[in-house]
Figure 1 (cartoon, rainbow, N blue to C red):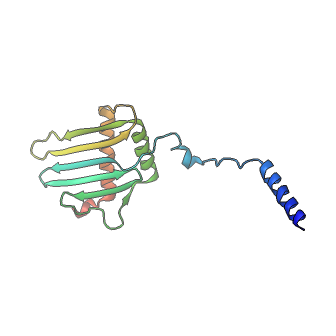
Figure 2: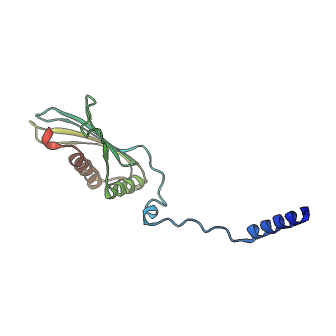
Figure 3: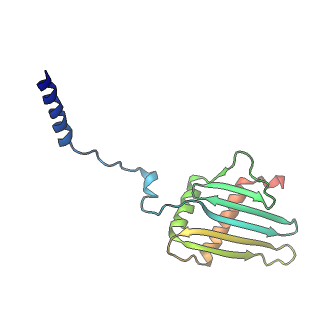
Length: 156
């Protein structure tokens, strides 16, 4: 009996050892996007807005996971308890920027002297390409779009 079990055990080892290894998982279209990009974590884009006739003072933070936080300088959330999240297209855009462009800080100040709004943009990219003025303006506009999407402007 002992010989029978030993024989079966050896046969199982031979069968398992001779079988082909499992094929590597093939990522779908969703996984292909991020395959060769460095791991991006933490806050990728932040914008501090201050000034204007209304005395605006707000911070917009967007993380690599797509989480959006918008608060006043006093720490009051302007989003609500449900929080904010980028949609899929916005997240892809953000991660592509973060893997392409190097980090930078830039100031954008409205030219209107009475109602000027100062914007300080911080981008935590991990790429090698320096973002030019056009790309920096695009990121500023992106933050503005995210703001408009997540804050009820009629409540302000």
